Amino acid sequence: MSAPAAPLTATHGRGFLLRNRWLLTRRTAQLGILALFLAGPWFGLWWLKGNLASSTFLDVINLTDPLVLLQSFLAGHKVAQTALIGALTVLAIYAVVGGRAYCSWVCPINIVTDAAFWLRTRLRINPSWQPRKATRVWILASALVVSVLTGTIAWELINPITMLQRGLVFGMGFAWVIVLAVFVFDLAVSRRGWCSYICPVGVFYGAVGRVSLVRVSAVKRDACTDCGDCYRVCPEPHVIVPALKPGDPQATPVIASGDCTNCGRCIDVCADDVFRFGTRFAKLS
Amino acid sequence: MAEDPKSHGRRKFVQNCAGLASSAGVVGLLLAAYSKQSKALPAWALRPPGALPEAQFNAACVRCGLCVRACPFDMLHLAELGQDITTGTPYFVPRDIACEMCEDIPCAAACPTDALSKDLTDIRDAKMGLAVLTGRDTCYAVARGANCRACYLACPIKDEAITMERRFSNGRGYFEPTVHADKCTGCGKCEHDCVTQEASIKVLPLALAKHDPKTAR
Image (tube, rainbow over all chains, first blue to last red):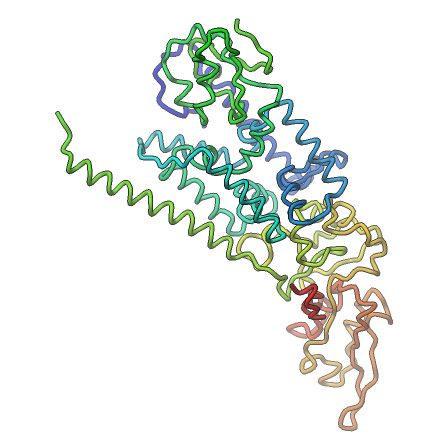
């Protein structure tokens, strides 16, 4: 989507590319990863085989979703070496680039929910049911418990992320129904509902994000003009407050919350260049 | 100008109803999708070689499709939502395309979670299913005493998994394709090559053919 995700207040002196640079980079990454998976079945270029649950890159490096593997373990299956190394590799990657970077840079459902948010904003659909923030934590917990009780990888029975991605790469069946349900939910029921209140995959990667290296920081927060644009575009606006408007003026400008998806949209929309990508050790400038 | 509180209440009511209906719809859709998940493998689908028994398989398989990609004959598929197989798990339909029984078992080798067990080292020990002569009334050899032995010829474990046994019935002699369960790998070649309209010999999932409560769950 090229248009801004919400009508913004600040007037920009900057060009289109500059004020959408992270959004465009992010879309390129999301579609590029999907393209790598599709290059095999479509063009015979088998660089990346499998899907987001588990894949092999160049027939050498295995990448396995740690949450899927955790459920498999809880369901009673002994973890195999390849999958374990693959999951640790994935965890290591996200420990660097930011836990929920998975959500905004890889997950194909993000494109669906961003589209729903964009349309919701355009259509001025205001009513929104906002479940409690803890809801998704409980859903994650219940997915793990159900895995133990039923001996299956429970969340994979309905996980729209892998449904959509596997559908695109291997064949969709009725998986589009689940994708459509997520879209409608985000459009008509709950603002940013799926990713911010329901999806347990985000909670899992959010836990990784609490320690991950790359973070967004409000390094020039003194330049903030209180326009509110960053809050408007942020899928998890509560993460901004402690970094941008802390009680203590000496407090760290780093957005430390694991909920932050490192999407960088706040950097894009801020006319005063308050935000930067940096490490979790970034200081005020 | 102040808004008419009555019209505001009505709007709110409509909005709430729309919200509720949508939520119910979403939950309903998810439940419907969930209920599509079946607990046992249907009779027409088989797991790749080395697959753990169905209950364990559902805990082990992460639905990544690496076995599908590893199969040189493109025989495997991942179940799609709406099919009677756990969504995303691999299967093949022997009547469409049967297992070629590669000696290096590339599908099992590609499995990152050992849902296709690496304990299977000789493909002749595979137990993907068991061939059963389901159509004695349609089988040319049995029902008509014809010299058909398509299944026998298709069997890669020649003269061991399927033999043509001489039988007599009402003074008439014929040869009956006879499956030897200890040798049959369930590759599906016999079912695939059977010449009758509907296959007279079919490979059934082991849990179904043997009806062992331990594996049939």
